[in-house]
Image: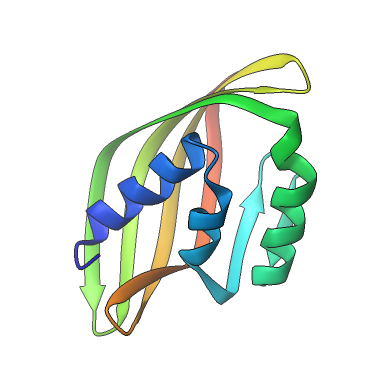
Length: 125
């Protein structure tokens, strides 16, 4: 996955498909992210694994639309800033969220790994 925008789109496509094993393969060991459900930070790949194990069974019908994607690269660090609209059902309740977001990737061998993801809600339910 040489292309940052392609990597970002793949990350969300696998998430939407609930292919969490593939999502986790794209996560760096020291990854960090903010979670809109718990309003807490998730720190480290093991924490992401635990989070997905806990929340994954409760979530369904996920669809993410990305727009206004801008990417930049400096050596082995890549940055993507973008807008996201995400729809999903959590514990039977439908959610419709809009975000401005940023994701930092690190180049590990031939692959980009997600190192940090932060999504700020800007509207929706």
